[in-house]
Amino acid sequence: MNYDEVTAGWADFSYDGPPPPPTQEASPARRLRDAIEPIAMHSVWSRSVNQRLAELGLDFFSGYAWSRASALGEPDPGVVVSSFAVFEPGLITAVYEQGRAIVGRDDLIAVRTEATTASLRDVLADGLDEAAVSGVADALQVAAQTADPTGRPLFAGFATQAWPEDPVGRLWHACELLREHRGDSHIAVNVAHGIDPVEMNILTELWVGMPLFSYTSSRGWAPEVMEATAGRLRELGIMWNDELTDGGRATRDRIEADTDAIEASIVETLGDDFDRIVSQLSSWSQRCIEAGAFPPDPFKRAAG
Image 1: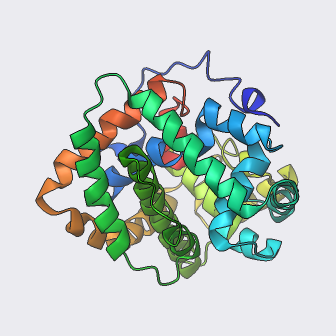
Image 2: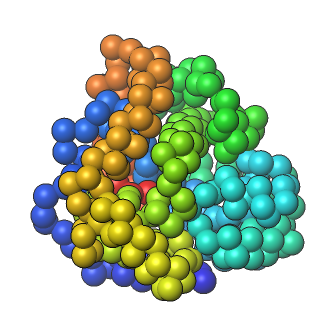
């Protein structure tokens, strides 16, 4: 599937309602997560980056899977399935192996870094304050370099990749690192709570206010698997019809709170500048959305 097919629904999207529940009265760790998401994912959602990867022979999904898995080296598919966690194993195995067969890891990393830096610089170009970008990138780089990599394979892998010299590239790389740190932590918390991959998807989509299976299906899970999982969650009292029960919401709230607690050290590292940094990141992320380099759906952003 190519970039245009994946993003076909963006042009007609509009939403004027309230923000997703997780972003209302969000914790500092959640505010940071939401502020960096469009910047961190610029390598995935930018048209120009996808065009560069297409020149290598990669479509949207093989580019995504191989680019992200490249943090792990060139692992067996089972390692990628485990690290990505929320995707149907057959799907992620197929697109990962497809991508790895098309282009080598070193070439992929070089093109991805160069293309993402150039694309993000273009998006932020109008009135870009180089000193502001460099200052925020410096602060996030310190936070990323001092964050604990234990049990966080994707974060640890990306942390070994070279930092771009361009301040905009450093900003993107730092945001990607912090995103993966939280993602790895969030998976660990879910596992500790006994939540399986399909349950992770369903709990998240309902928690942020998305329709049942709207997010889970995008991860490649078959209808019968999703229905069986939803039935099990209903039997456990986590769901009633197509919504979370009070108990189900409390369970997902605890998972989020535990994730926030693990990420608190990163917030502490940013110190007194935290609010200013988050405000600046939110502004740059909004420019990514306005440029069509990230999905405009706030619920997709909150779930991502």
